[in-house]
Image 1 (cartoon, rainbow, N blue to C red):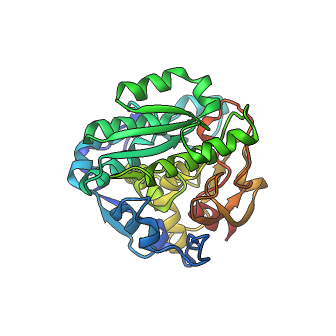
Image 2: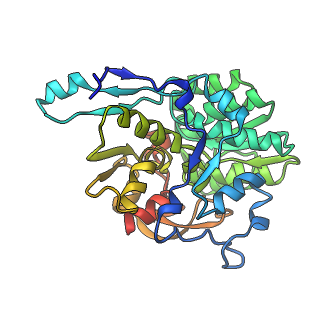
Length: 357
């Protein structure tokens, strides 16, 4: 066995060249998104006014195991990837445990998080389709920061609806987004019908990610050459985040290690889904038994442990498709604490299905 360093970077040539789609290994797929107007599963035509074409393809593809990563995205990723896998020797010593504890550090980029992995992909596909602008929501601001950087890299305008509680708590996040050229609005705002309706009900609301999604989608569908992008929850986002797990899997393989327990934080599900992807694949295929997967969620927004597994709107204004997921309800407004992006009312349909099964 190799000597395991404190901090290990995979060689650049071992970066993943394709995203892994965990749905391909699931014996039962997540339930489809539903068009609330027809009551039927959404089609490509239903999603086309909101999302870019290639992202719709990735969203709806249950059985395609791998999607090659386009070269322009790989070139941008090389600025901050591969991300280090760190052996927590001092924590092991403090706990006096025989366990080997590792963590994957995704903070070596401007957004300070894993969010850039999907932001670059979504901005790239928007530019490739000829879009001129994107809209999105953000909680703590990490997703907004990542997308602002990505839109600057690919030459797109960006409007970010930032949850008002975080907008007031975290002014420096706004500054970073604006430095990259993004327009940042506190949500709910008076710039959209959805925002005005929410403010009419509660003028003092601190907002939620569900509110911000409603505004961002409305802005996208009413603006020419504009699409909406989301930083978590959706299948396409978990697909892009699989680079976290794929790098971890390869690095651990080099040390002859395999995890007994895989732990990730869970707000909307993209960080957790990306980390567990190749390890859960082994479990679902029966190639590795007994691995335990742990989702750690905020007590202020406990969708998995306190939510119901049912179809619900992904946004407060109820203008998005409905997803089968663990949800606290589309109108749930979390306490305005510092959890930021971990305060989404629902959970990724893929994570929800895995947990439910």
